[in-house]
Length: 182
Image (cartoon, rainbow, N blue to C red; front, side, top):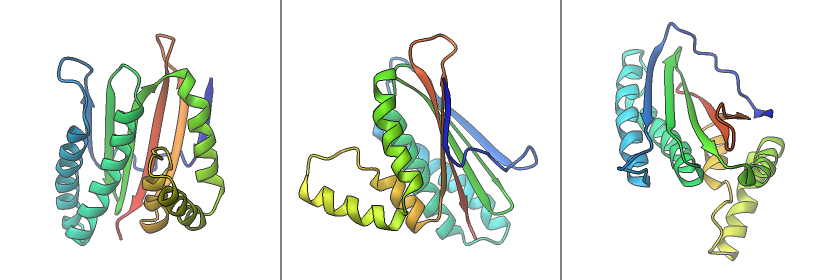
């Protein structure tokens, strides 16, 4: 099974500033605190690099932290056993991020329905609908508000690619985002 949604092509080639971080499955486990710490770390490093290119450091740092934290939290929250990998790059004022994790087959249909809606509807309209729906139902946890905020408020271009895992069982989910820092 191989299926893609949204914009999955990365444009930053080999001539760019790049970082990769892998959260190995093991005794330390994975937690949302790791997502926050990692996003702060990557935001600081990449924003410092972007400031050398004349971009506004504080704006770049804030946008990168929000983007990394949102995608990494989602990967940790919905991940099946296995590693979580974060790859990011910066070239020509474009920050690109890929978060790769394993996902169980039973989660895929619901996630694909959500992604289909996120990629085919207007993000602004859908964001307002989801905010209203979440206000009415405090137990809602899979609304896509974070992704919609990235798309609507930050202009992030998003993509998702599902593929078979080499070992069978779970599938590989690659969530990608591209963000202009200008």
